[in-house]
Amino acid sequence: MVELADIFRQYGPAYRAQYGERMPPSHLQAMVAIEACRTEILGGHLYQCEACDETVYSYHSCRNRHCPRCQHDAAQEWLEKQQAFLLPVPYFMVTFTLPAPLRTVARSHQKLVYNLLFRTAAAALQQLALDPRFVGGQIGIVGILQTWTRDLRYHPHLHFLVPGGGVARDGERWLPSGQNFLVPAQPLSVLFRAKFRDALKKTGLFAQVSSTTWTQSWVVDCRPVGTGSAALKYLAPYVFRVALSNNRIHKLENDEVTFTYKEGESGKSRYCTLPAERFIHRFLQHVLPSGFVKIRYYGLFSPGNRPLLHRVRLFLAGSASTSALSLPAEPRAEGAAQQTDLPCPHCGQAMTLIRSLPPRKPP
Image 1 (tube, rainbow, N blue to C red):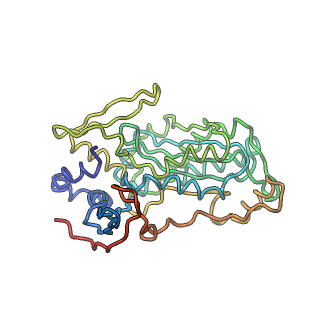
Image 2 (cartoon, helix red, strand yellow; image 1 turned 120 degrees about the vertical axis):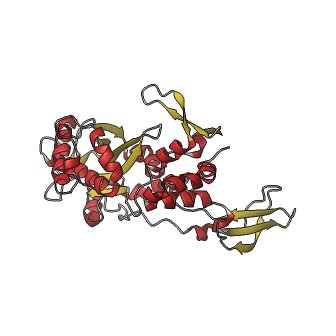
């Protein structure tokens, strides 16, 4: 089975030799980390089975958030920690898409544009929800940034998970939305466009954008997604999913990479074949800037609103016994997960930790 790391190890050095001076540090860091992941370069541990003398080298993972191997189980862990945010109301998914004329600017100034995208989309949704014709109160938002299409093309957009209702201005009442309606998408699109335009004017990038961008329709979608649990399960894959998982890589042949993807409308599986260099470029354009936060909480779910969210849960539960709010904890350090009862791949008996393996410098 071909993995992303195999492609990077084989073609990464030549790619960096050609484009390295123009690559953002985050792209270089991601490539090097993925190439070294679970190899002797990062060190690890040596285990031995006392029953059959089988030895196993267990190397450390790179923990890079764009590595397909390291992010495989992270979504489930995040999902379990989000239970503190669940409310017993219908939920909605609101998606904001950055229009095509802005994507060239966004690709070159990712951190600035992505921050504007988050800020203006959240502000537009919160403002419209405050209108008494719709919700009339303060809503909660969990926002996730995604930058790719199924075939790895550049397509920045936000998924906002929103409970159906909000808190009244007095903070003492829950104002439910309709079962199948939160806010109208068209007015939300117009408001989002205006807020993004005004925010971009305060930067040096506004002149780089065609004036027709501000008159065309911007895509905003708002739809019901069921209960909080169902909504979180729907959203969880977007949280830690990388642009391409290893199981979608079909083959590496004749310096070309073939991977599978599903068509959005038909749901049919298709193949996309790209030269290795182009494939690496298409993957790397989805590597986020260092330190960029791709999961954000607004309104009722923001860290400063813990007491208010706790009261809302009491309102909705109708019981003072509702458990206290706790925000998601930090991920556990990988070193704490190493155990000496690792099953032997040969006989199944518990293996014994023999020694730690120090990291080695790459060749």
